[in-house]
Image: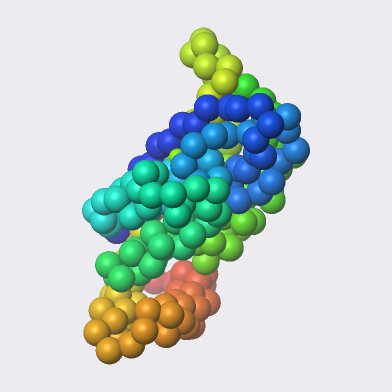
Length: 199
Ligand code: MG
């Protein structure tokens, strides 16, 4: 098992679109900075990379590189998920806390969870999104995100990814790993929920 933690913060800027957890939220101000400014997906990316000691988001996608300006942060999460799989792990669950004065996240929480679950390739029930206002922090113009992830070992996916990476294009490798994880997912669930024999 592995655990990973990610943190990020961005400043609110008027007239910028607001995107949190991969979801567009109607607001007169958005988050400026690296890519599309998605503070939550950036923290998710760092939590995933941190769990497998694979560096951080800035190492893969430097903010100084104009190529990432305005980029969809889903790209960063997908890369981090691939790093997790290559290291031989699968995502077990994700918990997150957003800290911001406004807008309210509650009405968007389910959509954000669904998008994160999709990007991570896990069930909705394994993704948690909580939000609170920055009481006493005097940060009315800042949105920050704390994310923690738990990974479980998945040797088969890791070995396959390592072996195949030597001779196959990355897209083919990723598709094969995806298949292995999909096949073993329901099986693992079945095993976990099977009734125990009485001793
Ligand atoms: Mg960021």
